[in-house]
Amino acid sequence: MAVKQLDKSEWTKDGRKWIFYDYVKNLDGTRRKYKSKKFFTKLEALKAEREFLTTNTERADKDRNMTFKDLYTLFYAYKEDKVKFTTLKTYRDRQKFFKNLENVKLKDFNIEHFEKWKKEINSYGYTTNHKNHIFKFFKELLNYATKWYNFNFTATYNKMTNFTNPNEIPKEMLFFTYDEFKKFISVEDNILFKTMYETLYY
Image (tube, rainbow, N blue to C red; front, side):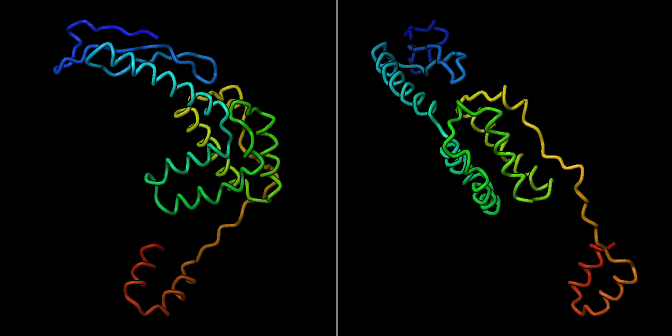
């Protein structure tokens, strides 16, 4: 850590001219430069530096031991005021798909954990499309952890693959023929619904 006085050209209009800076270690071992806001006096900068060191160390320790259950809680809280209620409900419902990962620390997550998770999802009998929607959400969780908590999942992320099932029989698409539609619409008396159905059909 270091405290320094800025060149006069960098002072704020109200006279703030002192900062502290350091290199902060990410969870993957890499470092990033941190520069504080500006302070009026050296004493203020030194006090802020000490508080930063304490807070950053405590947060780093907490983040380093974050589990998937912790991540899910943080992700949900972050999304509460950013998405629709129906989307939040989907997030809440999907928590059950990550029960076998709840106690896994993010720093320990590897391809073996993912393959075990994938095997469990396969056992549910969902369609491939639905399983891949769950997988997409899994990646969204990992991306959130990367962006906000500086985790690095690159080694595992690049090995994670979609669900596939070459033997799955596609569901047949059902639709009205024109004659069937005419029979259907002939019994609808409400002009609003009739107009809506006709617009959707054509």
